[in-house]
Image 1 (cartoon, rainbow, N blue to C red):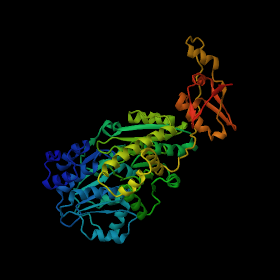
Image 2 (image 1 turned 90 degrees about the horizontal axis):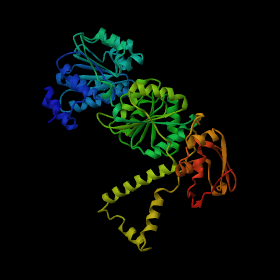
Image 3 (image 1 turned 30 degrees about the horizontal axis):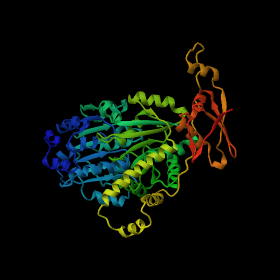
Image 4 (image 1 turned 180 degrees about the vertical axis):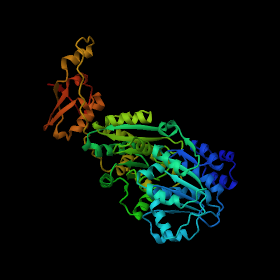
Amino acid sequence: MNEFENFGISQRLIDALNKENILEPTDIQRKAIPELLNGFDVIGGSKTGTGKTFAYSIPMVEKLVGDGSVEALILCPTRELSIQVQGEIEKLISKSKIKCVAIYGGESYIIQDKKLKQKPSIIVGTPGRIIDQMNKGHISFNNVKYLVLDEADEMLKMGFSEDLETILKDVPSDRQTALFSATLPQFIKNLALKYMKDPKKIEIESKTLTVDLIDQRLYYCMKDSKMDLLIRLLDYYEFNHMIIFCNTKSMVDELTNFLKKNDYKAEGLHGDLKQLSRDKVMNQFRDNIVKILIATDVAARGIDISDIDCVLNYDIPYENEIYVHRIGRTARIGHTGMAISIATNHSKGRIKELEQYTKSTIKECEIPTIEEIKNNSSKKLYLDICEAVEKNKDNNTYDKLLMSLARRSTDPMPLLRGLLSLINKDEKVYNEIKVYQKKERTKSKDTKSKSKKSSKEHGNKNFQIEVNLGSVDKIRPNQLVMLFHDQLKVHREHFGKIVINKTRTIIDVNGEALRFFKENKNIKFNGKTVNIRIL
């Protein structure tokens, strides 16, 4: 049974919801739909991903008659959100005479004039373009019975206050009004007092705003290593569909160019792009041709794609609410997701603020080593091959070629190695990630344990070790650090200056880490046994 039937809505709407496999209302839908069906004005505090579009559009569509006049007006802060809202409403009205059009800046007036001549019952749009069409006499709101202000807080932040005044003066006062906002600050309450009639206030508790469904992770590095760290994270996790957020348009462009040069399927999205370019990028992202979308917060408004694996904050947002808004895009209506933030040491206080605001923990993680990236890649390749084997059981296209190759040897291993080498022709080189060196705390004088005694003896003093690897072995500083981290569990913070000579390398090591090198195991690098001597 479809639980929406409990609202007493028409079978036509139930059929439309069944077609989209929408069977159970979200919290905001469960609370808002009955109030709106009963004719009350509603203020809804609801963030992206909680199902607010259907919360206001299901009662709206249920009440419209489709008489050729504009019966409903939905105002949105951005064109992206306008397009997304129109798309959701189309799912509900596909088998009715009700028409819905989106009117927004950046699209040709000729195209929009044609849309308006279709006599739509519902208009979705941005305030600026709506006013333009009003002034041209192409829109009349005399018969509007239903008004929605979607993401009202964002509209006011973007300076649409006067535009809203202009539009609302032209809409009948006996209408029903729904206002939805990610937050409900005082200026939203003032707006409600002015334009709404005894509204029912519905606010979803923060625990249901998808944060608890998101695996929040944090990686620290120095500012000039952020791009190199991003590459490691992309290769380590191998997300299928993700959004990377930047705070500025210039950073979006810079990061997009960087990832494209490194052969990632990435595109940028920000307010300076022309509408045709924006539409092209979004269509490619929806179709999964583009795997990585890099965007500013304003440009990403209205992006509603259900299969986003991860949201990555390349820049930490300035506002707590924006952080929640960003990461909520990866946990759509009950699904889980991952949110990763790249931060510098200066952002530690900011991270604590975000944790307090979201009432959740952002887990600090170790930077993936090259070995860990390779292992993950091998595991994924194994699963991909298993899936391909299953799919191609009856595919005989390459039988002749395989038989020819099989005759070369009874041992299948050389053949398999050769085939796999074609997949990974060149081994990727990763740059060293610069991290902040943590200051060691001074140990207590009255300590009695052996480890504390050792710490007291060595303090923060640096010692030197000699390793029998040098430039002839084609070893790099970051490879040495990774080698000792993986094999001896020596943390990166314990390494200092590294001088690579022809046949040996001298490394400055914090005294705290000497015990790890004394427990030297059988370590090899490219088949060569590594000898370590404490100088």
